[in-house]
Image (tube, rainbow, N blue to C red; front, side, top):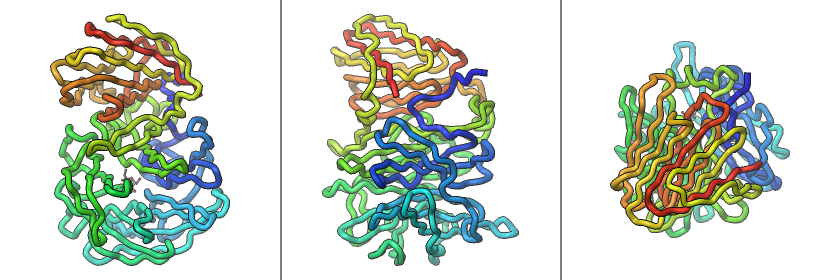
Length: 442
Ligand code: FRU
Protein backbone atom coordinates (compact mmCIF):
# COMPACT_ATOMS: atom_id res chain seq x y z
CA UNK A 1 0.00 0.00 0.00
CA UNK A 2 1.41 3.39 -0.96
CA UNK A 3 1.91 5.79 1.92
CA UNK A 4 0.23 8.96 0.67
CA UNK A 5 0.94 10.77 3.97
CA UNK A 6 4.72 10.45 3.97
CA UNK A 7 6.02 13.99 4.24
CA UNK A 8 8.84 15.33 2.12
CA UNK A 9 10.16 18.28 4.12
CA UNK A 10 9.00 17.38 7.63
CA UNK A 11 11.20 15.04 9.67
CA UNK A 12 9.45 11.80 10.61
CA UNK A 13 10.69 8.77 12.54
CA UNK A 14 11.49 5.60 10.59
CA UNK A 15 9.18 3.71 12.97
CA UNK A 16 7.31 4.40 16.19
CA UNK A 17 6.39 7.66 17.84
CA UNK A 18 8.43 10.86 17.70
CA UNK A 19 7.79 13.81 19.98
CA UNK A 20 9.86 16.79 21.15
CA UNK A 21 12.99 17.92 19.29
CA UNK A 22 15.92 17.63 21.73
CA UNK A 23 19.58 18.54 21.95
CA UNK A 24 19.69 20.83 18.91
CA UNK A 25 23.29 21.77 18.16
CA UNK A 26 25.90 22.24 15.47
CA UNK A 27 28.79 19.86 16.10
CA UNK A 28 31.62 18.98 13.77
CA UNK A 29 30.10 20.88 10.82
CA UNK A 30 26.83 19.01 11.28
CA UNK A 31 23.39 19.96 12.55
CA UNK A 32 22.15 17.55 15.22
CA UNK A 33 18.48 17.08 16.00
CA UNK A 34 17.85 14.51 18.68
CA UNK A 35 14.24 13.70 19.41
CA UNK A 36 11.97 11.94 21.85
CA UNK A 37 11.38 8.50 20.45
CA UNK A 38 9.45 5.34 21.12
CA UNK A 39 11.05 3.18 18.47
CA UNK A 40 8.92 0.17 19.37
CA UNK A 41 5.34 1.43 19.24
CA UNK A 42 3.17 4.39 18.29
CA UNK A 43 2.46 5.32 21.91
CA UNK A 44 4.20 7.07 24.83
CA UNK A 45 5.07 3.94 26.83
CA UNK A 46 8.82 4.19 26.17
CA UNK A 47 11.20 7.12 25.54
CA UNK A 48 14.75 7.34 24.30
CA UNK A 49 16.61 9.89 22.17
CA UNK A 50 16.79 9.22 18.44
CA UNK A 51 18.98 11.32 16.17
CA UNK A 52 18.80 13.08 12.81
CA UNK A 53 21.80 14.90 11.32
CA UNK A 54 22.31 17.15 8.33
CA UNK A 55 25.07 19.25 6.82
CA UNK A 56 22.81 21.60 4.92
CA UNK A 57 19.43 21.70 6.73
CA UNK A 58 17.91 20.00 3.66
CA UNK A 59 18.91 16.36 3.52
CA UNK A 60 18.73 14.55 6.83
CA UNK A 61 19.86 11.13 7.93
CA UNK A 62 18.29 9.22 10.79
CA UNK A 63 20.86 7.39 12.92
CA UNK A 64 18.53 5.30 15.10
CA UNK A 65 19.01 5.33 18.86
CA UNK A 66 21.38 7.83 20.47
CA UNK A 67 20.70 7.61 24.22
CA UNK A 68 18.91 4.69 25.85
CA UNK A 69 17.12 4.35 29.21
CA UNK A 70 19.64 1.84 30.55
CA UNK A 71 20.55 3.03 34.07
CA UNK A 72 18.54 3.01 37.32
CA UNK A 73 18.37 6.83 37.17
CA UNK A 74 16.73 6.99 33.73
CA UNK A 75 15.04 3.59 33.60
CA UNK A 76 11.59 4.95 32.65
CA UNK A 77 12.59 7.28 29.90
CA UNK A 78 15.23 9.57 28.49
CA UNK A 79 13.10 12.69 28.58
CA UNK A 80 13.67 16.00 26.80
CA UNK A 81 16.76 18.16 27.11
CA UNK A 82 19.36 20.20 25.27
CA UNK A 83 22.99 20.11 24.10
CA UNK A 84 26.05 22.34 24.10
CA UNK A 85 29.26 21.94 22.15
CA UNK A 86 32.02 22.51 24.72
CA UNK A 87 35.75 21.97 24.32
CA UNK A 88 35.23 19.97 21.09
CA UNK A 89 32.80 17.63 22.83
CA UNK A 90 29.07 17.35 22.61
CA UNK A 91 27.56 17.59 26.06
CA UNK A 92 23.89 16.73 26.47
CA UNK A 93 21.54 17.49 29.34
CA UNK A 94 18.42 15.41 29.71
CA UNK A 95 15.90 14.29 32.28
CA UNK A 96 16.03 10.69 33.43
CA UNK A 97 12.53 9.65 34.33
CA UNK A 98 12.07 6.84 36.85
CA UNK A 99 9.10 5.22 38.57
CA UNK A 100 9.16 3.13 41.74
CA UNK A 101 7.13 -0.05 42.39
CA UNK A 102 4.10 2.11 43.25
CA UNK A 103 4.43 4.01 40.00
CA UNK A 104 5.65 7.19 41.70
CA UNK A 105 7.84 9.40 39.56
CA UNK A 106 11.35 10.56 40.42
CA UNK A 107 13.34 12.74 38.03
CA UNK A 108 17.10 13.11 37.66
CA UNK A 109 18.84 15.68 35.51
CA UNK A 110 21.68 14.00 33.63
CA UNK A 111 24.81 15.14 31.89
CA UNK A 112 26.28 12.93 29.17
CA UNK A 113 29.13 13.54 26.78
CA UNK A 114 30.29 12.42 23.36
CA UNK A 115 33.52 12.97 21.51
CA UNK A 116 32.24 11.68 18.16
CA UNK A 117 28.49 12.30 18.19
CA UNK A 118 27.83 8.54 18.15
CA UNK A 119 28.55 7.26 21.64
CA UNK A 120 27.30 9.07 24.72
CA UNK A 121 28.92 8.50 28.11
CA UNK A 122 26.63 9.30 31.01
CA UNK A 123 28.63 11.39 33.48
CA UNK A 124 26.68 12.64 36.48
CA UNK A 125 23.15 13.47 37.53
CA UNK A 126 21.35 15.41 40.22
CA UNK A 127 17.99 15.27 41.96
CA UNK A 128 15.04 17.64 42.26
CA UNK A 129 15.57 20.41 44.85
CA UNK A 130 13.23 20.86 47.82
CA UNK A 131 10.05 22.83 47.16
CA UNK A 132 9.32 21.25 43.77
CA UNK A 133 7.44 18.13 42.74
CA UNK A 134 9.10 15.39 40.71
CA UNK A 135 7.56 16.96 37.59
CA UNK A 136 10.88 18.65 37.06
CA UNK A 137 12.31 18.22 33.60
CA UNK A 138 13.58 19.35 30.21
CA UNK A 139 16.88 21.13 31.06
CA UNK A 140 17.75 23.84 28.57
CA UNK A 141 21.32 25.15 28.81
CA UNK A 142 22.60 28.49 27.50
CA UNK A 143 25.33 30.99 28.32
CA UNK A 144 24.34 34.30 29.84
CA UNK A 145 27.07 36.87 30.60
CA UNK A 146 29.75 34.17 30.84
CA UNK A 147 27.80 31.97 33.22
CA UNK A 148 26.10 28.75 32.15
CA UNK A 149 22.39 28.78 32.87
CA UNK A 150 20.18 25.70 32.95
CA UNK A 151 16.46 26.41 33.01
CA UNK A 152 14.00 23.67 33.74
CA UNK A 153 10.26 23.12 33.43
CA UNK A 154 9.04 22.66 37.00
CA UNK A 155 6.03 22.43 39.25
CA UNK A 156 5.68 23.91 42.76
CA UNK A 157 4.22 21.90 45.62
CA UNK A 158 0.95 23.81 45.03
CA UNK A 159 0.92 22.52 41.46
CA UNK A 160 1.79 25.73 39.68
CA UNK A 161 3.98 25.68 36.58
CA UNK A 162 7.27 27.58 37.01
CA UNK A 163 10.65 27.79 35.31
CA UNK A 164 13.57 27.10 37.67
CA UNK A 165 17.24 28.01 37.31
CA UNK A 166 20.59 26.36 37.94
CA UNK A 167 23.96 27.92 37.15
CA UNK A 168 27.38 26.46 36.51
CA UNK A 169 30.90 27.50 35.61
CA UNK A 170 31.98 24.23 34.04
CA UNK A 171 28.70 22.77 32.70
CA UNK A 172 29.23 19.91 35.09
CA UNK A 173 28.45 21.02 38.65
CA UNK A 174 25.15 22.88 38.89
CA UNK A 175 23.89 25.15 41.72
CA UNK A 176 20.17 25.57 42.21
CA UNK A 177 19.18 29.27 42.17
CA UNK A 178 15.45 28.95 42.72
CA UNK A 179 12.51 30.08 40.63
CA UNK A 180 13.55 31.91 37.46
CA UNK A 181 10.03 32.75 36.32
CA UNK A 182 6.49 32.22 37.49
CA UNK A 183 3.20 33.08 35.82
CA UNK A 184 -0.35 31.82 36.25
CA UNK A 185 -0.30 31.37 32.47
CA UNK A 186 2.07 28.44 32.95
CA UNK A 187 -0.87 26.42 34.19
CA UNK A 188 -0.17 23.46 36.47
CA UNK A 189 3.19 22.47 34.94
CA UNK A 190 5.73 24.10 32.66
CA UNK A 191 7.45 21.96 30.03
CA UNK A 192 10.37 22.55 27.67
CA UNK A 193 11.49 26.11 28.50
CA UNK A 194 13.98 27.69 26.06
CA UNK A 195 15.67 31.04 26.08
CA UNK A 196 16.65 33.17 23.10
CA UNK A 197 19.11 35.90 23.96
CA UNK A 198 18.76 38.82 21.56
CA UNK A 199 21.21 40.74 23.82
CA UNK A 200 19.03 43.76 24.67
CA UNK A 201 15.96 41.52 25.00
CA UNK A 202 15.48 37.97 26.11
CA UNK A 203 12.67 35.70 25.01
CA UNK A 204 11.53 32.91 27.28
CA UNK A 205 9.76 30.13 25.40
CA UNK A 206 7.63 27.82 27.50
CA UNK A 207 4.90 25.24 27.22
CA UNK A 208 2.06 25.19 29.69
CA UNK A 209 1.02 21.59 30.07
CA UNK A 210 -2.73 21.39 29.69
CA UNK A 211 -4.82 20.74 32.75
CA UNK A 212 -6.79 17.59 32.22
CA UNK A 213 -10.13 18.13 30.51
CA UNK A 214 -9.51 21.77 29.74
CA UNK A 215 -9.75 22.54 26.07
CA UNK A 216 -7.58 25.39 24.98
CA UNK A 217 -8.40 26.82 21.60
CA UNK A 218 -6.55 30.11 21.86
CA UNK A 219 -2.93 29.08 21.90
CA UNK A 220 -2.10 25.88 20.08
CA UNK A 221 -1.32 23.42 22.88
CA UNK A 222 -0.25 26.44 24.90
CA UNK A 223 3.21 26.78 23.49
CA UNK A 224 4.20 30.42 23.70
CA UNK A 225 6.71 33.02 24.81
CA UNK A 226 7.28 35.96 27.09
CA UNK A 227 9.42 38.98 26.17
CA UNK A 228 11.60 40.35 28.96
CA UNK A 229 15.01 40.53 30.54
CA UNK A 230 17.17 38.43 32.82
CA UNK A 231 17.89 40.45 35.98
CA UNK A 232 19.60 38.96 39.05
CA UNK A 233 18.92 35.35 38.05
CA UNK A 234 15.23 36.02 37.36
CA UNK A 235 13.35 36.47 34.14
CA UNK A 236 11.31 39.67 34.29
CA UNK A 237 8.60 39.60 31.66
CA UNK A 238 7.12 42.69 30.07
CA UNK A 239 4.40 40.81 28.18
CA UNK A 240 1.69 38.27 28.68
CA UNK A 241 2.04 34.76 27.27
CA UNK A 242 2.16 35.25 23.49
CA UNK A 243 1.29 32.45 21.09
CA UNK A 244 4.00 30.96 18.92
CA UNK A 245 1.57 29.24 16.61
CA UNK A 246 -2.18 29.64 16.09
CA UNK A 247 -2.84 26.36 14.31
CA UNK A 248 -3.67 22.90 15.63
CA UNK A 249 -0.31 21.20 15.95
CA UNK A 250 2.67 22.83 17.57
CA UNK A 251 4.37 22.03 20.88
CA UNK A 252 7.71 21.75 22.67
CA UNK A 253 9.81 23.85 20.27
CA UNK A 254 13.56 24.11 20.68
CA UNK A 255 15.92 26.78 19.40
CA UNK A 256 19.45 26.45 18.06
CA UNK A 257 21.94 29.25 17.40
CA UNK A 258 23.42 28.38 14.01
CA UNK A 259 27.08 29.14 13.26
CA UNK A 260 26.02 32.11 11.11
CA UNK A 261 24.17 33.64 14.09
CA UNK A 262 20.63 32.75 13.01
CA UNK A 263 18.26 31.37 15.61
CA UNK A 264 16.59 28.27 14.16
CA UNK A 265 13.56 26.64 15.70
CA UNK A 266 11.87 23.26 15.26
CA UNK A 267 8.68 22.24 17.04
CA UNK A 268 6.92 18.96 17.56
CA UNK A 269 4.07 19.16 15.09
CA UNK A 270 1.41 17.66 17.25
CA UNK A 271 -0.97 18.35 20.01
CA UNK A 272 -3.05 15.27 19.38
CA UNK A 273 -5.13 13.68 22.09
CA UNK A 274 -4.53 9.97 22.61
CA UNK A 275 -7.72 9.18 20.62
CA UNK A 276 -6.35 11.25 17.73
CA UNK A 277 -2.97 9.56 18.01
CA UNK A 278 -4.40 6.08 18.00
CA UNK A 279 -6.57 6.75 14.93
CA UNK A 280 -3.95 8.76 13.08
CA UNK A 281 -3.73 7.40 9.52
CA UNK A 282 0.08 7.10 9.56
CA UNK A 283 -0.13 4.43 12.26
CA UNK A 284 -0.91 1.79 9.68
CA UNK A 285 2.51 2.57 8.23
CA UNK A 286 4.11 2.08 11.64
CA UNK A 287 5.00 5.64 12.65
CA UNK A 288 3.48 8.71 14.24
CA UNK A 289 4.17 12.48 14.21
CA UNK A 290 6.68 14.80 12.61
CA UNK A 291 8.66 17.94 13.38
CA UNK A 292 7.97 21.33 11.82
CA UNK A 293 10.19 22.61 9.06
CA UNK A 294 13.13 24.66 10.39
CA UNK A 295 12.05 28.22 11.07
CA UNK A 296 14.38 31.16 11.49
CA UNK A 297 13.27 33.25 14.46
CA UNK A 298 13.84 37.00 14.74
CA UNK A 299 12.63 39.66 17.14
CA UNK A 300 11.08 42.61 15.32
CA UNK A 301 8.74 45.36 16.56
CA UNK A 302 8.18 43.67 19.88
CA UNK A 303 7.29 40.23 18.57
CA UNK A 304 8.84 37.04 17.28
CA UNK A 305 8.88 36.61 13.53
CA UNK A 306 9.21 33.09 12.15
CA UNK A 307 10.28 32.35 8.58
CA UNK A 308 11.14 29.00 7.04
CA UNK A 309 14.90 28.82 6.46
CA UNK A 310 15.93 29.93 2.96
CA UNK A 311 17.76 26.60 2.42
CA UNK A 312 14.37 24.91 1.92
CA UNK A 313 14.04 26.65 -1.42
CA UNK A 314 17.60 26.01 -2.62
CA UNK A 315 16.54 23.63 -5.37
CA UNK A 316 12.96 24.72 -5.83
CA UNK A 317 11.21 24.98 -9.16
CA UNK A 318 8.75 27.68 -10.14
CA UNK A 319 5.56 25.98 -11.36
CA UNK A 320 3.25 28.91 -11.94
CA UNK A 321 2.78 32.63 -11.37
CA UNK A 322 -0.61 34.16 -12.08
CA UNK A 323 -3.28 36.60 -11.00
CA UNK A 324 -6.26 34.29 -11.52
CA UNK A 325 -9.20 34.58 -9.15
CA UNK A 326 -9.58 30.79 -9.19
CA UNK A 327 -6.34 28.85 -9.21
CA UNK A 328 -6.48 25.07 -9.07
CA UNK A 329 -3.32 23.09 -8.54
CA UNK A 330 -2.38 19.46 -7.98
CA UNK A 331 0.15 17.81 -5.74
CA UNK A 332 1.45 14.28 -6.12
CA UNK A 333 4.68 13.27 -4.50
CA UNK A 334 6.29 16.58 -3.66
CA UNK A 335 5.98 19.45 -1.22
CA UNK A 336 4.66 22.78 -2.48
CA UNK A 337 4.94 26.39 -1.50
CA UNK A 338 1.97 28.60 -2.33
CA UNK A 339 2.90 32.27 -2.02
CA UNK A 340 0.37 35.05 -2.39
CA UNK A 341 0.95 38.80 -2.33
CA UNK A 342 -2.15 40.97 -2.11
CA UNK A 343 -2.42 44.49 -3.51
CA UNK A 344 -5.54 45.58 -1.74
CA UNK A 345 -5.70 46.15 1.98
CA UNK A 346 -9.07 44.45 2.38
CA UNK A 347 -8.44 41.16 0.67
CA UNK A 348 -10.49 38.12 1.31
CA UNK A 349 -9.47 34.68 0.14
CA UNK A 350 -9.94 30.95 0.59
CA UNK A 351 -7.55 28.05 0.22
CA UNK A 352 -9.16 24.62 -0.01
CA UNK A 353 -6.76 21.79 0.68
CA UNK A 354 -7.48 18.51 -1.07
CA UNK A 355 -11.05 19.29 -2.07
CA UNK A 356 -11.91 20.68 1.36
CA UNK A 357 -10.36 18.17 3.81
CA UNK A 358 -9.01 21.39 5.31
CA UNK A 359 -9.39 25.07 4.45
CA UNK A 360 -8.10 28.53 5.25
CA UNK A 361 -10.49 31.50 4.92
CA UNK A 362 -9.94 35.19 5.43
CA UNK A 363 -12.70 37.76 5.49
CA UNK A 364 -13.37 40.98 7.40
CA UNK A 365 -10.14 40.62 9.33
CA UNK A 366 -10.90 37.11 10.51
CA UNK A 367 -8.66 34.23 9.56
CA UNK A 368 -10.18 30.78 10.03
CA UNK A 369 -8.28 27.53 9.71
CA UNK A 370 -10.48 24.45 9.51
CA UNK A 371 -10.00 20.75 9.14
CA UNK A 372 -12.10 17.64 9.40
CA UNK A 373 -10.81 15.79 12.41
CA UNK A 374 -9.87 12.21 11.42
CA UNK A 375 -10.82 10.87 14.83
CA UNK A 376 -14.12 12.62 15.63
CA UNK A 377 -15.02 13.33 11.99
CA UNK A 378 -16.12 16.81 13.15
CA UNK A 379 -15.01 20.07 11.54
CA UNK A 380 -12.77 21.96 13.92
CA UNK A 381 -11.58 25.55 13.59
CA UNK A 382 -8.96 27.98 14.82
CA UNK A 383 -9.64 31.71 14.57
CA UNK A 384 -7.31 34.64 14.50
CA UNK A 385 -8.01 38.33 13.98
CA UNK A 386 -5.52 40.02 11.65
CA UNK A 387 -6.40 43.50 10.50
CA UNK A 388 -4.60 43.34 7.16
CA UNK A 389 -3.03 40.51 5.24
CA UNK A 390 -0.42 41.50 2.72
CA UNK A 391 1.17 38.13 2.11
CA UNK A 392 0.79 34.45 2.83
CA UNK A 393 3.22 31.61 2.37
CA UNK A 394 1.85 28.10 2.75
CA UNK A 395 4.18 25.11 2.87
CA UNK A 396 2.03 22.17 1.83
CA UNK A 397 3.58 18.80 2.53
CA UNK A 398 1.79 15.49 2.03
CA UNK A 399 0.12 15.51 5.46
CA UNK A 400 1.40 18.69 7.10
CA UNK A 401 0.75 22.34 6.36
CA UNK A 402 2.52 25.40 7.78
CA UNK A 403 1.06 28.82 7.09
CA UNK A 404 3.11 32.03 7.46
CA UNK A 405 1.10 35.26 7.41
CA UNK A 406 2.57 38.72 6.73
CA UNK A 407 6.18 37.54 6.41
CA UNK A 408 6.01 35.26 9.42
CA UNK A 409 4.39 37.56 11.98
CA UNK A 410 1.71 34.92 12.58
CA UNK A 411 2.06 31.18 11.97
CA UNK A 412 -0.44 28.32 11.89
CA UNK A 413 0.57 24.65 11.76
CA UNK A 414 -1.70 21.75 10.99
CA UNK A 415 -1.60 18.02 10.28
CA UNK A 416 -4.29 16.87 7.90
CA UNK A 417 -4.69 13.54 6.19
CA UNK A 418 -6.00 13.79 2.65
CA UNK A 419 -7.15 10.46 1.29
CA UNK A 420 -5.94 10.95 -2.27
CA UNK A 421 -2.71 10.20 -4.00
CA UNK A 422 -3.20 13.20 -6.27
CA UNK A 423 -4.26 16.06 -4.02
CA UNK A 424 -6.31 18.82 -5.60
CA UNK A 425 -6.01 22.20 -3.98
CA UNK A 426 -7.64 25.49 -4.81
CA UNK A 427 -6.93 29.16 -4.16
CA UNK A 428 -9.83 31.62 -4.54
CA UNK A 429 -9.55 35.40 -4.37
CA UNK A 430 -11.41 38.22 -6.09
CA UNK A 431 -9.09 40.98 -4.97
CA UNK A 432 -5.99 41.82 -6.88
CA UNK A 433 -3.07 39.55 -6.05
CA UNK A 434 -0.15 37.58 -7.45
CA UNK A 435 0.01 33.90 -6.66
CA UNK A 436 3.19 31.87 -7.05
CA UNK A 437 3.42 28.11 -6.87
CA UNK A 438 6.76 26.48 -6.19
CA UNK A 439 7.75 22.85 -6.02
CA UNK A 440 10.19 22.23 -3.19
CA UNK A 441 12.83 19.70 -4.21
CA UNK A 442 15.16 18.09 -1.72
C1 FRU B 1 6.67 17.49 26.25
C2 FRU B 1 7.13 16.38 27.20
C3 FRU B 1 8.33 16.80 28.03
C4 FRU B 1 8.96 15.49 28.39
C5 FRU B 1 8.73 14.67 27.13
C6 FRU B 1 8.51 13.21 27.37
O1 FRU B 1 6.02 17.00 25.13
O2 FRU B 1 6.06 15.97 28.02
O3 FRU B 1 8.02 17.60 29.15
O4 FRU B 1 10.32 15.60 28.70
O5 FRU B 1 7.60 15.23 26.49
O6 FRU B 1 8.41 12.54 26.15
